[in-house]
Length: 142
Image (tube, rainbow, N blue to C red; front, side):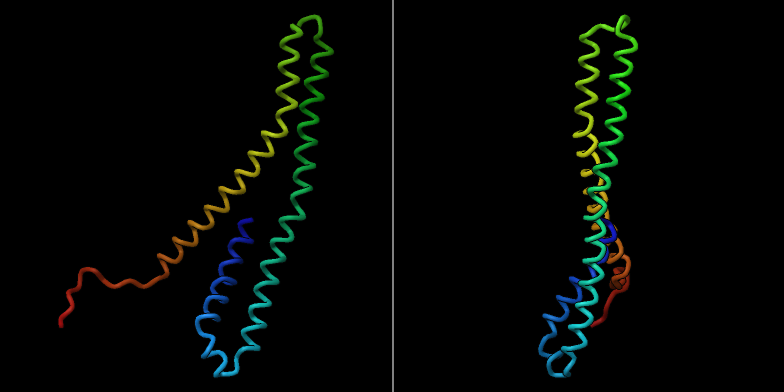
């Protein structure tokens, strides 16, 4: 998601510059070049977006396997120690291990969203550092 968000910035900038300078682009006959550049940026952004969506089912399957192993170990422990454990405690352990999948998925989604928001903060910091600013200490005459 981070790479897709970073690759979206040049696409948005190119589109905004093209729309703002449309009369100049048409006057110089550069519409074809701008169109090809925009298509290339769209392809780059879409490829990263597609990779992200193709990896999501794999991640979901991987998380389900981890939770299944945890649930299996809880069930095995409950069977092996059936004389030592209280049935209510076993029920709580099995219920919590079953609800673990939804909590892990929510955590993964939230961490991806936080990373995406940090990308926006990184872009703002980059633009603030890259943008030339007037010197505040120099008095102008005039």
